[in-house]
Amino acid sequence: MLTPNSVSTKPAAAQSETDVVSWVREQTGLIAGHRHPLTWLMEACDDTAYSILDVEDAIKKDLVSPEDLRAFITKRFFDSTDGGGIVNQLQLDFQKADGAGADLTRVKEIKTSYIRTRLVERVLTGAAEEFLRDRQAILQYGRTKPLLECGGFASELIDALKEFARTHAYNSPNVLQLELQGARVIEGLMNLMWEAITGREDFLNLSSRRHSPQAAYVYSKISGSYRWHFEHDSKDSKLPIRYREMQLLTDMISGMTDRFAVDLYAQLKAATDG
Image (cartoon, rainbow, N blue to C red):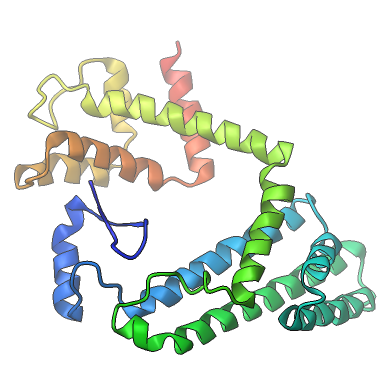
């Protein structure tokens, strides 16, 4: 169902997008297994955002404090030539925040902002330097490792932030409780919608009547645009019906916000449990 990228274990494109992939390759001159040079920078930005924003989110939820993170970075990198700079900078930043004359909540926000700014700046600078250092291999499609797996300070900093998040955020009882609730919602939605998508009187006719009132109701709650493409595009599609069914389910679930998913599941459960 997915075409693996030869330079990573990450999936590249679904089979239903082969026409789009072919068009992109024609326009860019890329061939299978080649990554556009800019994707290395996009990947680094993505990894930076998730690693730093996860830590920032933990601070905002009061799982840790800005001082906790600064102490962690200080202990890990104070003796490092590259790390000493960011340790000293954060110390000066925190002194400015403490002397701002603001209330404690605002001081915390200021310190968190400093942390985000300094970390993003340092990590992306490291990624850019690695891109420039290895640009020949990147332009010749010879590089295999992400920019932030280069063994430099930026890589060490990202790894440290992920370790901090695992220890103080991901394993927090409150976070684990939310994760459990989210898993139950997603599993429940997938079960209900899969039954609604596949529960047709005529297997080959994707728009045929559903075999039960529950299936008909749940199917009606799937995005009208998604359903239209599912039912009409199948006539010219070379993809198996089961593939198209799974794609409809995936599109619907992955397009939901957290709040929408929780509210929709509660609505469906209330209507179907009786």
